[in-house]
Image (tube, rainbow, N blue to C red; front, side, top):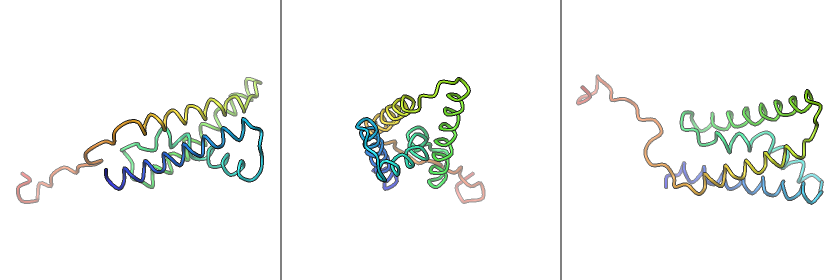
Length: 131
C-alpha cells in the first residue's frame, strides 16, 4: 500500500472515531469542551471528507479544502431548508448525517486500496521514444 493510501486510511479512521464519539456524546447528553470541539470538526470537515476525501481529481491539499467547503455548504443548506420549512430538528439531522458519514467511511475502509497512479501524464512528444 502506498504512503498516500496509508495516510488516507488514517484520516478515514480518525474521522470515523471522531464521528462515533460525537454520536455517543450527543446520545448520552454529555456536554463540555470535547463535544464542542468534536462538533466543530464534524460540521466543518467530516461529511465532506467521507464523500469527497478520496476524490482522485484533485491534489492532497485541495482534497481538504473541498471537504471543508462541501461540509459547510451541506450544513448551511440543511439548516436553511429546516428554517424555511419551519421544521427545526437539528439533532435528527445530525444523527442521519453522522450515520451516513460512518457508513461512507466504513464502506471505503472495507474496499481494497486502488492500484495505479492518480494522474499519468501523456508521453512528451519532444522526449525520445515519445512519438
